[in-house]
Image 1 (cartoon, rainbow, N blue to C red):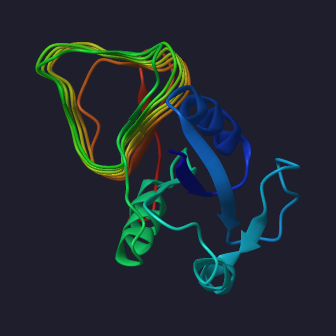
Image 2: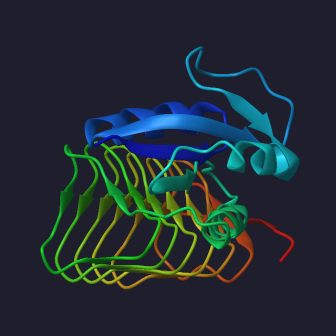
Length: 216
């Protein structure tokens, strides 16, 4: 039986997510994007916005259809809202773990998480809904990720790190043990975080230092 899946978001992350979904036996059936963008796949139809989604609903495949928001980066709140929008219209939101990722038996993953190739999630880690742990990122023991967090490729969270809702940890960043990253914060690529980061702060560098505030 074909397991149909759709993505909201038609940029680079959709390409990575399609590879992971295909490895798990899903078939990408449709794409949606709020902007007028070039289709990333010749064999998958692209619909624009909620009007396009409504048109697609009228002819969607019979049986269960799964859906994920293929939107990474600092847009965790948007990812959560879009996945909830799809769920409200009968689309099932899976938790997707690439076969080449490692997830400890006692780790917890919320609905709609995306764990990509080479990612490692170890003992007693707790992930909320709609989190992304990207390629070769590492989330060590007893870390807690709130809803909508994105851990970018190659980033490392040492043990007992707490990451607030919709925060982003940039590519190759390192967060030392028992650090708290605030909600809606951004840790820049390659940063080394040695102290807590407040809500809505952007930090960069080694050691990481305050750079600017984000709007809440």
